[in-house]
Image (cartoon, rainbow, N blue to C red; front, side, top):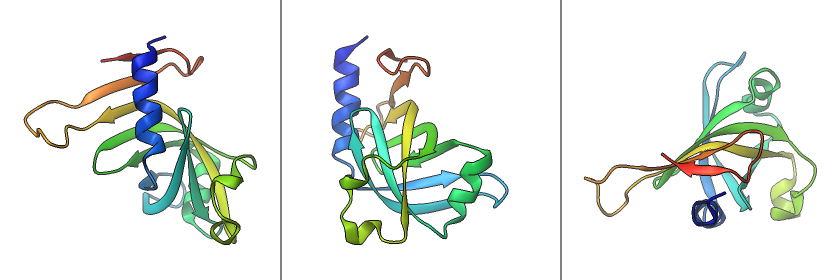
Length: 132
């Protein structure tokens, strides 16, 4: 396990409060900006109960999540725990989903000529990551 990469991913996700979620499935391709909160290497998103994202996630849990500074590919699951990451007012008529990352691309913000930094997460053991 590369603690340096794990710590970097944890910090980046913890600093993010809004992101764009993209799902695909029976409801077609969907993309929405949603509130989020990082906890460890997991990212928790608040999705409206009437969103087509939830319908898509029933059949296809793989998602893409983006911000201006990073892109993440991961697997989504509806969860009950960690609802306290969001206020009770925010949670009203919303569902919390947890994104377990598969790959995180950190984009060069101040140096566009540089290449993105990539962190791969081992699906079987979230503790094993490497940069590629």
